[in-house]
Image (cartoon, rainbow, N blue to C red; front, side):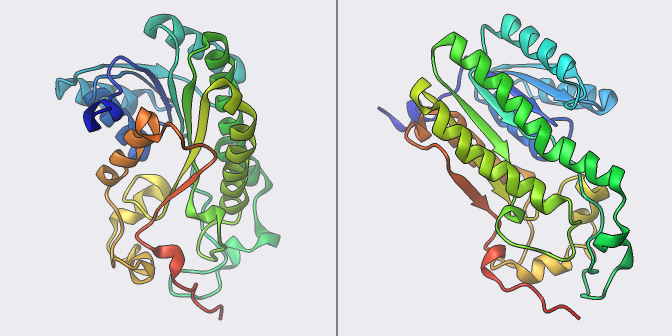
Length: 278
């Protein structure tokens, strides 16, 4: 098998949640550029339309379609998966990517206590929202992916966006985010164990700090990202372009013997000790 054929995703049917911005958009871009038929899902209709138009304007080898949907609306997600399957001749690759920021942690980036982020002051509705989008919607996206892929009988690849937050604790990140991402990573391993017999691979991408719109786009602010720059072995945070090779690897036959894995892409940030608490 040639290197080119190993990474070939041309003609594959791909679905990406949380795709209007950031990493989800990057997944969609690389898949469409390499010849896949891609449907991008997001609740932000205006931004999703711009994303689709901009990807289409690059003259990709594949196709790109938008589906406006709330990933926490299970009936709506059922309908979208059915629509995508009919339009694209099934579903081969699913990026379960939707996620939201969990707000400030109990520490500021400078290491000072932040009362608004302390557990006794957390807003319960915010906790429910973060868990609902960052964990429960991932479960339901994986459930629908498994249902379609098993019925098709041709295997597939499910790729969930987790985080390095699944492996360590961090005071400057909002508390709900940490167990949500740990749950995603554990869910990936559990579902991979179940679906392997059907030729369906399930893996997690675990990013460190990337410059995206999450957290109000704080990573685009030089001052806000300095804490992460200091902790990175490479001395910087990443651009979304840098996630694309890993996404292509996991979507293609190049990773045909990889399942249940947690693919960390963080510039070595988790190798550095966390700052001491004040």
